[in-house]
Length: 267
Image (cartoon, rainbow, N blue to C red; front, side):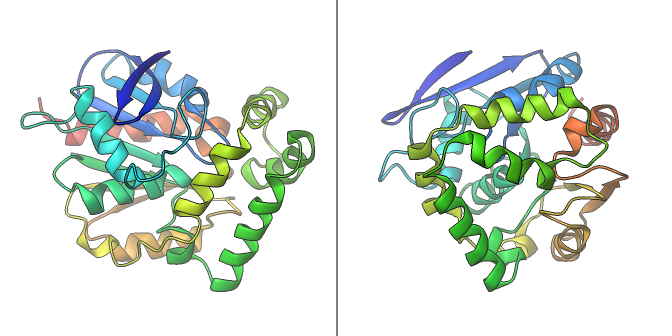
């Protein structure tokens, strides 16, 4: 892994390949390792970069006063030379990472060339009922006081379907084993009750929405609402897979991403 100083904090990331830049933003309790297959598959044609969000993986915890996650991401991309006057990256955000991508658009709409929002929300408060937002907030708050061995059996059935193989389950469980309560607590406080529903109609870059048909965390009803709200967006539903569709169906997920990038990358 590589690291870069962004303000007062160190951000870790993985990078591979050459070509138009594609940035991956992982979900909660995860880090850049979740994108191992995508870095391998897509680096033949693109510069693929996956960060460890502040508070996750090998990155420092979120520093108070450092700005929003979107602002931190903007500084990260600029520092690495992935964003600037003549370069704009494609930004792919998964679940919690989709909220970071939306915040990037809100704060720095000049940066992303396109958005790919996978298993996405307009923030929990922008896509879910107030009761469900508070239930999830309380659940995660309580989990941060528990060991991973008690959290993993609760989360896995909501992330993967019964069709997931044991290696797939092990990949996700291994990431959960390494989460940092202090880092997750800061991320929950920063993004757990955010509402980006008013941001969606302002998006003017091409936007791909990728969802699993069997997702129970961000179900198809959420996908359809996001699709209605984002002008000109394209919605792709991958059959028979759940929240982590790219883990259960990497070939179909990566093919959808590649097709999108080929259609929207500068030649």
